[in-house]
Image (cartoon, rainbow, N blue to C red):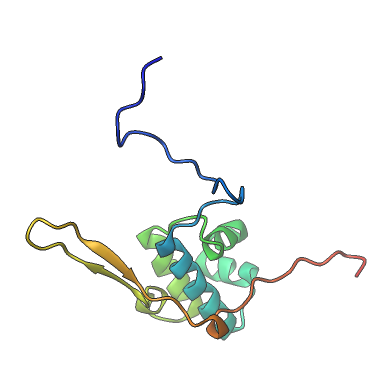
Length: 126
């Protein structure tokens, strides 16, 4: 069996040390912003999914940073939240490269106290 070409290797979706799914920084920032806007609107994931014509599990995947949203999804989410798509992209910027250098994303993290915590699932018996 031959070695794969450099740069053609598939990345492992699980983070080796923790075994948890790997979340890209851009997805993590979008996830936090979406969760923040949803909480501010006082909506559940199910209510937002209905308003945005998306499946409830899609909202969960986006809020955990496990899925990158398509442009149409960002527009639907913003409409469901009654905010501008710009609100969902806050804190994310692209800086084009200059003089042969590659471009880069700039992601401004939220202060910890501004990120709503994920909801904890409770047993029906509780």
